[in-house]
Image (cartoon, rainbow, N blue to C red):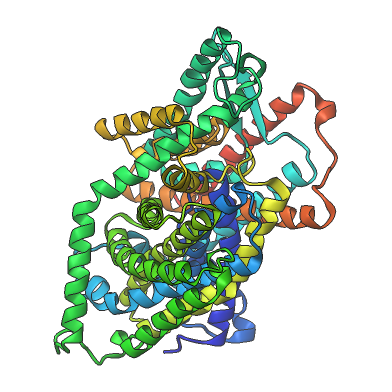
Amino acid sequence: MRAFTLRAIVLGSLFGIMFGAANAYLGLRVGLTVSTSIPIAVMSVAAFRMLQPVLGRTTILEMNISQTVGSASSSQASGIIFTIPALFLWGFSPGVAKLLVVALAGGMLGVLFMIPLRRFLVRNEHGKLPYPEGTASAEVLVAADAGGTHARNVFMGLGVGALYKWLMSGLNLWPRDAWARVPKLPKGQIGVDVAPALIGVGYILGARIGLVMVGGSAIAWLIIIPIIELIGRGMTEPLYPETVRLITDMDPEMIWTRYIRYVGAGAVATAGIATLIRSTPMIVTSFKEGMRGLRTRAEGNPAVVAIKRTDWDLPLKVVGIGVAIVVLFLAVVPQVFGFVEFFSIRILGALLVAIFAFFFVTVSSRIVGLVGVTSNPTSGMAIATLLGTSLIFVALGWTDATGKVAALSVGAVVAVAASVAGDMSQDLKTGFLLGQTPRYQQVGEMVGLLAAGFFICASVLALERAYHFGTPELPAPQANMMMLVIDGVLQAEIPWAFVLVGVGLALAAVALRIPALPFAVGIYLPITTMTPIFIGGMIRKILERRQPSEQAKRDVREQGVLYASGLIGGDGLMGVAIAFWAGAVGIPRGIGHEWLGPVASGLALAMMVALAYLIVRAARYRAH
């Protein structure tokens, strides 16, 4: 049966470029990304069917290769957007070459280190490690190939998301958000961002996570900001020296920018570390089991080393040579660690990348087998890498700007490697269930990384030029957190009072068994971002409750998630397109909504209601 074909590679690469750029935009907006394996699998089936008169009949294994190639780019984007924007926040301006080297080096290490783990984690642990997204992707491919209607909602969502984004941000027909003041609460206000991607994210995450995130945001905007305002009323000088204006002269958005971002960054960093600590037993077990699998394979145990086509991996010789080339490249090329000319820093940085990447690839590949890609604590792994690297640099006296950039570069490569390995393990599970040849998927992952890497990096740079990181349009919360960690260790130039408030809130969430990282992200991001996520989650919960059977609930969940994925993709793609347009000729002015006056906010809310209605219709498409 045909599998690794040129048409599968080309189609998967195109989908990878699309969803990789969209995921980059989403991550910079919300601080999280979503797994794209399922929508890309569905779109691959639909595209091959449309092209069947030209290309002939396509096998399910070709569709699996297309899905594997395409999904590689989304995980590559996650590692980049969680770290690299910190360079811009420091005032540096890395070019596309710097970003591309980090993306490709991390991606290749993730793929290479995952190869010898596949037989143990994916095959031998079958039945013990469910790999939820990988299993779901296999089911979707089988069902869609048999004549399902899964693709309709993905493409509808893509079209609606892109059109909506163009009307809102391209033609500027209505404002992006609507605000309302809370009576008798000093500078207290609530709001909603009416972007399609956010309500789509909420539907995918569900009501519980949406409630946790909006709860964290409510604490920031309805409790902490009013408290800061009350404190400021009795002060005759700025609360924090960095701020030259009195609190009473600031609006809520400025208070959030000047103060709450430190509270949120402290909460996110603490939540990431806490998540990693709580996962320590799993991490230790994962690493031990991974090492046991490697030793068993190295000993040539005939029970493990199979000769069937479905067990063909790339040879260990290729893995070893590939890792050596990547590490040597990182050590030799000065630009990798931010134009660091000191060879000693480059050598140490490359060695730290190899050590941390090997460890966290092993951990990530097993953790996602239990909790899925969306719940993979990649940011916690990146924080641990940055802490370890920064402490070593402090001991060596490398605490200047060179040390900061080098430490962040190490964390960026490791974050990409861990993210790619987690996604790759899900794809390998899909292939295992379908009878795919692993070697084809492993090569496909590398091709996907090479094909989409440039476009993802170019998209990140275009977004920065158009909107700038750290603004309400692109808060880049994870990158802010990484910057906070490095500055805190190397230079200690942080308003620790606000950071410690965030630390306390995150620890309280851990003690109350509230999902700490979503809660912390809610504190960090504007309440306008969290409100639509909560709305999307509640739509899903209400729809599922009203279904008469478990099968109907599954249909509503599945169809809604596919439509929501399309909304995210369409919104993100159009956002990136507008960013490129803005970089070339300036941000589009459009028709403008200012002439509507106070009616503009009402129009924005009406468009949010229309989005909610479309999601409900799409989710119920198969339920009736």
